[in-house]
Length: 414
Length: 98
Image 1 (cartoon, one colour):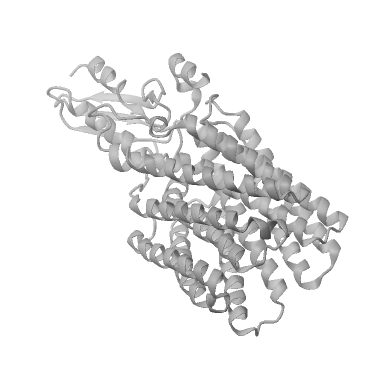
Image 2: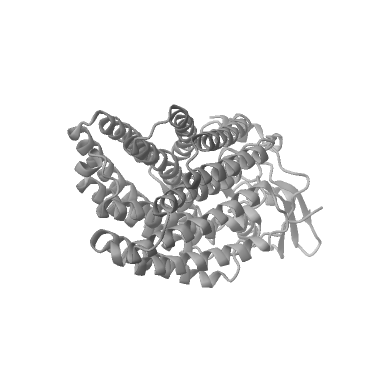
């Protein structure tokens, strides 16, 4: 009878520290976007304040939270402990302080942003090294391993391209600035985040829905199509051939659709019929992400060149797929981390709360509903050039984001 | 040491994620009681790498240690036979199906 060999000795202060910082960055990013609503409406995405907000949202929130979540999820998914776990406080220190300096410099002195970028790069490099060494310890190389490893490769490439961008700001001496810029966004947003969420979803979706007897047959086709799609689209930024880009977006959409279909199979095989509401939100994010990929194919086929429309599509992808996924999963991850710290030693000795009792699910439903409606209002208002709508929607998003962050922090006092 | 007492105690160990006790979930595969009052619990989890691994195993130990004259409690976590929802009691299924 094979016995379990699990090393679940994660120091939960580490992932929690990343997550708490991420939540603060999330709120600050929303406030900056709110203040700059007018510029967004005019299609001015590439201005210092928006660079700062975008990096606070993607680096400060999504990236930092993803890093923190990996310190908890990698041992769970790959049944191995984090390699030299205590060293994880160094990436925490460098990445978080680097994000603050980087976002600040982007807003107030873009030409000096290279200095912030250097600190962030040091932090992320340390994280990458630690994760690669951790993954090397994995005995069974599953499809989840392939997704997460590919995501880490994408993160490395994103970081390299981002560093080149910051260098070009400082020296004005890097050719192909636009190509590097688009590659940076593609590999970061579509590559790193999506592949990481794909990989962990193959563990988290069945775990949270108690799904059994499902097939992951489509996973290998999903990742193959997605990675080739990423390569095609990135090449198109350098050689400017329209059909290469169209093929790339088509392959990305096929890959995402296969992933969605596989998640549907897992969902249909679930034994927990009443799913937790925040988790349902993460599942809805998959459908939205898939839809946006299909719209991107239509944009490419129709030859849409408008930076404004592509900007809105990218914004929708970041918010509706990446941010929504993370927001939903955080409502599961944070209560678990805190429960483990506070109650794990008390189970069996006295009555302890369930994980569901750690969160205010009713509030979560209100927050996620209002957030979805206001994001749709924001996108609609941007497309319709309705200043009041943009201002109102972003104002609501800012308030909801703040309440969301507080509702997560409150868990740490239970 | 009576098996019934042990079984009854295990009903009080709740999976914090599913809010269902580990017996109704069908996680307990075997209970062995030795003459020295030492007890071996052979059990599994709903999924390999379940993040509640340590908590649930410790919960079993903590609860059984509260029984009078209990000897050493050993929990052996196994992956075969693989847990599946058919192991659950009717009560657990009712709770999950809502």
